[in-house]
Length: 206
Image 1 (tube, rainbow, N blue to C red):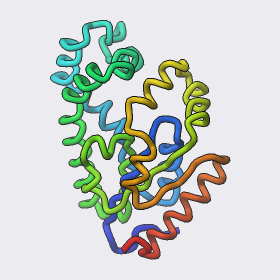
Image 2 (cartoon, rainbow, N blue to C red):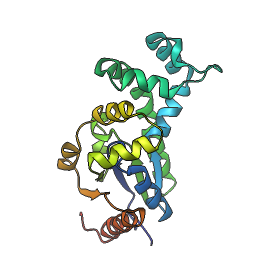
Image 3 (cartoon, helix red, strand yellow):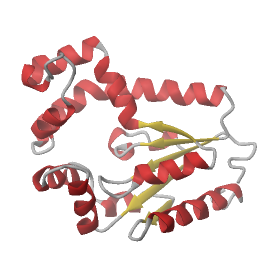
């Protein structure tokens, strides 16, 4: 399937932990979309020495592994259950993260990518929805999300904290241009992603 046509479209792909958002991004990539990951931009941001040093000053050396790299799970255990600590993290990381993400979008547009997908859980929280032509939200029932997160290796408390750290699905849905409910199999999710891409190709949202 040829995607994007002559336009240089940017799709904001978002959804809470355990919804299957990143699997949807993988399926879009298989169809030719360029995927820019908010998580990857965040990793690059915290790898810069000024950001990492500020994180250590704020949260202590306990967030570091023995080799001096950031222990993301340890940091997550500190911040996801405490809104004040999460705000401190966001204040440190997000400015650098968003600069990285914006530069990546600009570069992919310059390279002529017909469809760029920003795969990021916090598109609305970051205030970058206006960077995108359309917003696609992937949702799933809370019980399904919990099951997926625990299977991925999180404890029940970690899963709950991560879900509760983001705005509710209903709020994201209210701001979306298109919604996919991921309640079935991977094949079902792939089919729904294909349907969305066909609508994009057809200019259904213009």
